Image 1 (cartoon, one colour):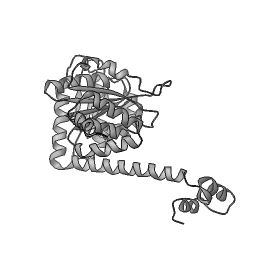
Image 2 (cartoon, rainbow, N blue to C red):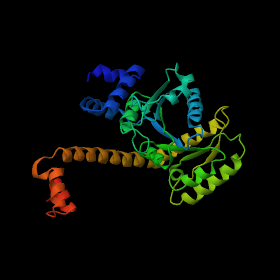
Image 3 (cartoon, rainbow, N blue to C red):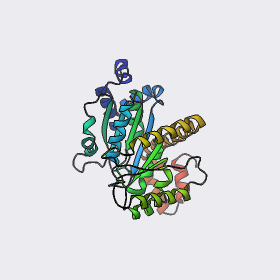
Length: 311
């Protein structure tokens, strides 16, 4: 990879960033090389994940959040995770349409990312996509998940701060969320707060958070917004900024990032081992070992040890 490509990326050139993300999505040796080259340039951006139940207005809230950040002079990149198209396998681009008012702003880069059916809704390449946006010098990187229930807790593996979005009259969803998604909330937003039932939803969410906050250094604030009109957006911006500053000051931000990096390294290593296992031939091939187990010559654990060279 030529140095001028990396220089253009570091300068924030949108077309170069788009090419870099496409490369990360395709994977392969070229993506590995570019990622190695950009790794020393990452770690400066604040990565904010937005998740929550479908219909809560996440995209509209993010649109208002972007406007507020731009009003404060910050540059933004958005990775809006869409369900993969059943025809092309690509993102359906719905979130781009909802945020189209920012399309001509050079300080905002928006990319729809296909989930490719990945469990949890986040693309397997999302770590690298975020790194590319970071290396391009964006101040804030926003990840919007597809909103597919409790599997959305996966966003905590990538984001510095998780914003969980709910809406009034979604009580059943709150009950379903409390075992997982509310527990990852750094900031909780009840959007569409101009609707009936907003106050009751705030109380219910706050009660769930109070029960799940044990052992945490931060109790997520419960904020009310009307994203379509901008009501409450400043409070969301301030809450995210305050929490990020607190994490940085206490060392918790570095700890979170280190734990995430350990998980990413582990995932890469597991992928390497899986490919090695599948490419094993002869008496130690999966097929041969499976036949030996079925014939009673080996038990599954002994076969697995043999497969990885421990027996």
